[in-house]
Image (cartoon, rainbow, N blue to C red; front, side, top):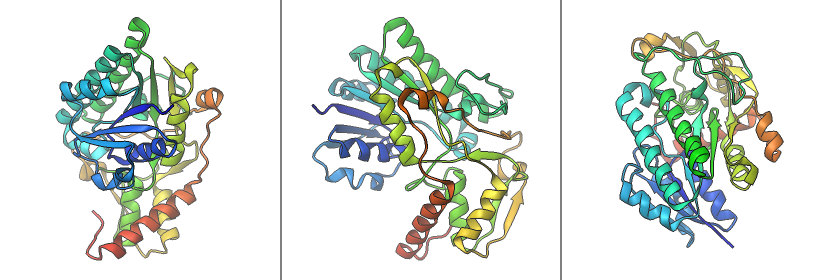
Length: 332
């Protein structure tokens, strides 16, 4: 029998793909989003389904969250202030949204005894570069004066709340830490590196690498991430646990820029911009960010299926299609 899933942040990049996947397998879905960073167009396909309902509202609205939680069986909490650029430029809004919004969602899930999946982030690990990072790895953070660590701290509070409700009050909660998810519908507007590089390359503009480019990341396709979320939601043994979800294929940001330029057949130069020019003073970055994903492999047999080159080709094709549809489009 189909269940009803409440997805917060439903019109966002990951949220909209999760909504599509849930509908494809016959579930009923309620999508909640304030459209601050999401786009209603991401839900065009879902909007044609009689099993989908969109609610324009905020996780900060306790009455709305309570009403929708009452109607649902399972909640996936994706709504959050995301993206390095947004977090650094609006630290207060990001911090309060992420903490208070999660508190409201978690309390409502407990009130109605709903299964809850909280999406967290690899930012939890801070500057710990002892890769691969297992779920019990230490958090290594900078000072409170650096805006970036406010995001890591807020997401840690989300995790602590969800796990405390599980341990002390029996809330069926799962925490998932996402590492650099990429794919269709991801906006370049908030500092997401692949969409930004790709749109610069197809526009023939300089591809701007922040810092010296030696910092490395691993990129996982959104379809693989959604498969992980669904697998964990369907696994009773996942309750009360924390799982990393991401690729282990590591690449430097400088190499990533060069590879995108090559695959796109672009003439764009790759230029380096010091952090203090790209962000406010005091910005800190992590040199490496590689997940240990053995735990989720053991739990549900999950592993990424798409290579980085496949991801980049798809991203370039999407950006080219955007330019055809809107010739005046230019990379941000």
